[in-house]
Amino acid sequence: MSDIPDKTLERLCLYRRLLEEQLLQSKERIYSHELAELAHITPAQVRRDLMFVAHVGSTKGYKIRQLIDDISSLLGSHRKQNMILFGIGNLGRAILSYFIGKRADLPVIAAFDINPEVTGRVIAGCRCYNFQDLDSFLKSNSVDMAILAVPGSAVQTLVDLLIDKGIRTFINFAPPPVIVPHYVYVEYVDITLSFEKAAYFARKQR
Amino acid sequence: MSDIPDKTLERLCLYRRLLEEQLLQSKERIYSHELAELAHITPAQVRRDLMFVAHVGSTKGYKIRQLIDDISSLLGSHRKQNMILFGIGNLGRAILSYFIGKRADLPVIAAFDINPEVTGRVIAGCRCYNFQDLDSFLKSNSVDMAILAVPGSAVQTLVDLLIDKGIRTFINFAPPPVIVPHYVYVEYVDITLSFEKAAYFARKQR
DNA sequence: TTGTGTGAATTAGTTCACAGCA
DNA sequence: TGCTGTGAACTAATTCACACAA
Image (cartoon, rainbow over all chains, first blue to last red; front, side, top):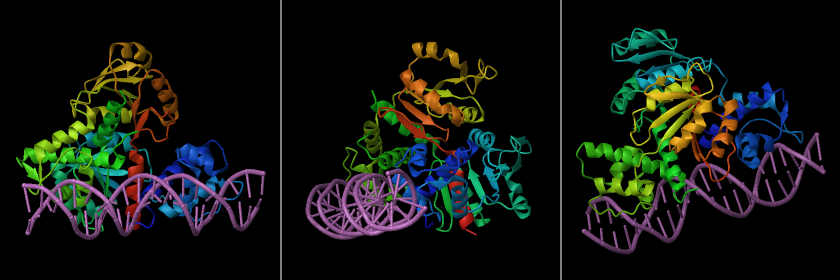
């Protein structure tokens, strides 16, 4: 899907965030070993990752401002990308209240559910529509990504339908893997899995 | 930290969940290629992972019930592991409302915050305490894991303090990496990173 | 046959270590 | 001198391909 390895991509996002924090503390330059310490990895890893970025450091380290810009131009500029949410249950509401307003470039512009009890209102600043209004919504709004917070049993059908309507990128909070064509990207967020993993280590420790 | 590779561990958790669903559909046996399809990976990968599990399949596939038990005994039994949450902001509340009651074996038994406005009440069935009550709470309750949903700037200090109080496993929803001794395990959940990654692919697609 | 279990081969990801530049 | 950039070495993860068992 990409010329940048997945792991590198994740770390580049992380570096950018860490670098932005450093800027706020009015630091101007940074060495690979400093960034490595912040990211909790090795300096060699940092330098290897930065090879994908068109940027030259010097023996005085990297210019932070410039490095952020270079990473951003590799990852694609921060132009606004609209998201819509499906499923206004506990999880959907949780995502809304956590994420709304957090990133101006990644707004959740609408939420959809089939349950009429939850539609028609505004949650955390996000208008909730009935699922049947999706078509007309898509006609008058540009949507870049869909957030899936529906029950696992419903997610495959929903994804098929949304692909049919032209959506190509998904963030899926529902556990089961979905099958999609090669030109569609699905990012999985499996919170329960993270808890289970941690639980495994907690058991081992005693 | 473990004899099971991290990736394998994640997939074993996933297999168990998928197998449990299959049981509910009164399926009794399953082939590696079927499980592979459910998990959206290769059959070879499934068989390789199952080599860590003391279990023998046959040319008729795996017995689902038995395979679940074998995975469970490898991952450790489903005994109850208590969790406590730190930080009752949007994110903390979101985690509570999503996770409370979801897994009987992983209950969130209390939440803590320094802000007196949010403490003293009950959110999603979880009692919220002031941070200063932590010591007495820990004296009378067994806690296996701590969920961290505090601002990034506070997380390192908090972790240091909790390690000092004997907590050894953390699920960290705050972005910045924390530094911990080798005997402590931190599982990171970085939702913003997932959104950023997806956004990268969404940009590439057009 | 047919599908598992697993050595061997391959590919991906990380670290080493050092040349070369400021 | 001290740090970056990067081939080379190494380690982890995945896939291949086939012996073996039912």
